Length: 109
Length: 110
Image 1 (tube, chains in turn cyan, brown):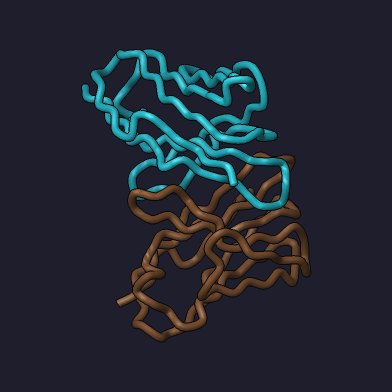
Image 2 (cartoon, rainbow over the protein chains, first blue to last red):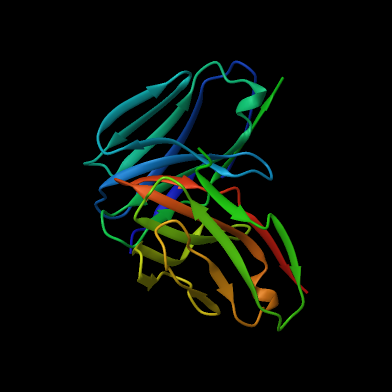
């Protein structure tokens, strides 16, 4: 069973700061997902990646397959980025995703 | 395009009651799954389905039943609710690994 660890668990930063959230997993995967969950809200998929780097607006996700590690970066952070960010690993089989416990991010104005 | 629709959004049950959480998707995805989310823990897989007529257990299946009679619908049944089933439940459908989640059902069992 894959173990997915995220750090930090909680992060408070000032508006404009560069944010990094880390995710590590224990066994090989077919893809790594980054998800966003606003308080009381649903879960939205931000990225799915199996190698390299993806960028969408101010969000960047990277993955290092050899080191079993992924990072989510937010540039020029804004209070609307405040949310829980979750990484999840999929093994390619039919047994769904294995989730990290999430990083609770607060961006203060 | 509605995506994944879950109903109800909120529910309070008494211990021992039964209920069905509904999940429907309009994207023609074969793979659907149910997760529960508890404080301090990651989402955990309850049951999943790889197509109509095919279901299987996930990590925490006890106390839950599922069926998949159509591609669109994947209901989750609580047979006899227990306080330990108080949680937020998410349904998801997937296509080539990309997951689409419903808005969640917050269930409280008293």
